[in-house]
Image (cartoon, rainbow, N blue to C red):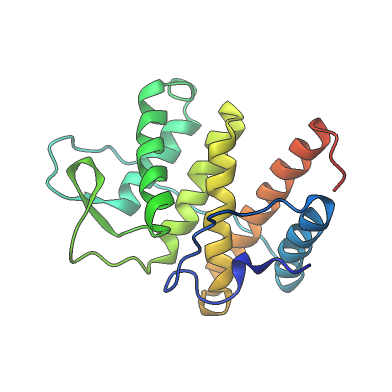
Length: 192
């Protein structure tokens, strides 16, 4: 069985994941094989960088990169790591990604897509995967891990178009993802 969710450019033609069957151990083996094949191509892994940013609440346009920086640094803060408002905001951007499988450079208030916004900035996908990874670490809610898997599927599909730094960031995220999935399968006593 091959892991087909990373075949072809998934930014140009997103996965739907509709009616995805779970094929047990064979599926897990193909998933782990897919991820490890990318790690074999990368010698180094580098955590994506984030800047501390405050968000103005009266903005008419939300710049996604800055917004993701804000979410990630808020999750890293001891004061905000369990703040329900942060997770409500993360849930909103995750929902937007889940619907379109794209992350736009800009959004209108309430995360409505801006008509002239691009969705090909790979750094936004790397940052969203980091936010989802950290959210999963804190809450153990599967929707964050599921979203992270889908973002990483998308990134792997355009691996050859990535800069060296983006590839290193992806390698770091894949290591985090494999760790999350490995711990979950151990907890559920599923072989990996």
